[in-house]
Amino acid sequence: MLWLFVFVFLAALPSSCGAIVSEKLLNQAGLRTVWQNAVALNPPSQRLWRSPKEKVQRITILGNYLYILTNSNYLFCLDRNTGRLSFATSAAAPKLPVFEPADYGGITYLIAADDIIAADIEKGAELYRNRISFSVAASAAVNGSFLYVPGTDRCLHILDTSDRLEIFRASADNPSAITSVLATDKYVIFATEGGDVMCMSPSEPRRLWQFNAVGAVTAPLVMSQNHLYISSRDTNLYKLDVGNGNLLWQFRSGSVLTTPARAAGAAVYQYARNKGLYAIDANSGKQLWLLPAGLDLLAQDGSTAYVFEKNNICAVMDNQKAKKIYTINFAPVTMFAANVYDNKIYIMEDKNISCIEPIKK
Image (cartoon, rainbow, N blue to C red; front, side, top):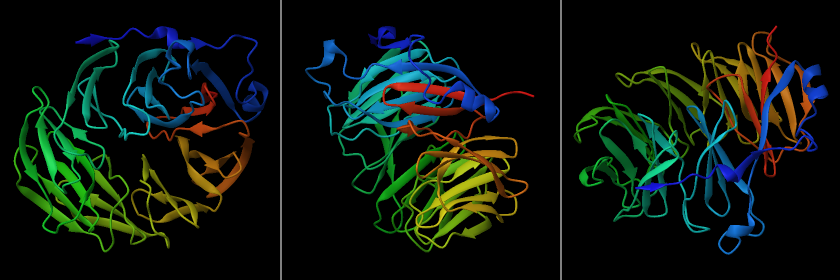
């Protein structure tokens, strides 16, 4: 077991360092900064193996943590409520694939190159790092017993989380690559390039239901409140009942969908190339609004949506009135996270990261 205490890699910004977005501007828009910190990009002690031009490559929100991956494949995990660094590690050598994390029971699992990494983020501890015998095609999913890993061999490999031994494999009826997988203790659902979406028992390769989209499904599946959202290259966003696979509605976007839906309570947000960002009523599947310059959801606060637009603009949308209320200049922002959990907005300017929230009235 490898214990990593790396709190030196994150420090609160000195007071002389300005906010990413000025507090005055935020306050005028009814927002405030909760915290602002910095991650250590290319520290002197690690310059031999971390890029001298190290940059943040992506930010993922999973539960109460932010996972910040750099182009050197260095991973920082921050408590998103306090900004405190909980864990950091070199996930893989630069340029090797590092997939999105999955978590269950306080343990985070990450596929990095050909390794499975498990970590107790709260304790700042890497529990194990084991080599796997097959090449990985997409992010893994986990439940209380198993880890579900899509392989480039077009099979879903089911591994025991305790000893990492492979228990069985599953695949679709057609020889299509598996592009996404979700898991709970009751269901495992995976999608393929052929458009098949399969639901099976979590402990055996027994099919529970199947849904066939017209086009390939290459965007990650999204599950929210026992509903499944499928963003398909056939231009449709599908909403299914997880329990039986029944289609509840489909929304035609008019463009190939290659990014996942953002399911945030009463509204679902879907980016469509050359169209913009759609807001869709989660119950009816009807369009609320379309923002042509919209790229992704930043956060939602009740019926108010904060959207990152082209040209680094934050658009504030009223979902009930289906109109833009105002905009905020986010010119310095170089990276942001999509938050469907609550109303906090996470933005970065190079190494600096800021958490913003609406001011309570």
